[in-house]
Image (cartoon, rainbow, N blue to C red):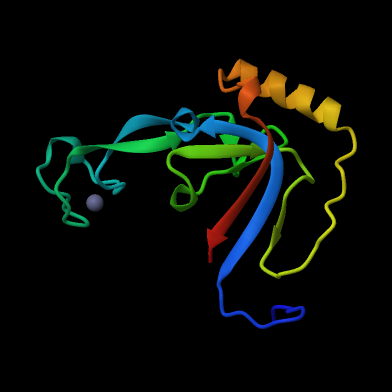
Length: 146
Ligand SMILES: [Zn+2]
């Protein structure tokens, strides 16, 4: 249950803050071709339709994450990659720096320890992937509809 302080609101938005790097989400993925079904049927490559599941056999392009992007993370940095909240951007987050609130109240954000070191590590990690841009690193604040 949401805690309300002072007044009641039926608004369904939440706000968030984080320290991190804005990145182009397109750089998180590459395209790869795969067959339209995964059935293990002898001779399926030459067949027009799969004899097991019935789909038309063809190669389709799929989006696959780059090898460094595993379990929503690159290295120790969580990747926020929510298309509905952005127009093609994703964010890499400094661990411990993100907070979300749907309550209308003040909330203290603990300053991240070792921020300088974490930023340096983030810079090194993302420079290697050609995603680092000093101007896109900072404190990000946003509001989203739930
Ligand atoms: Zn099939």
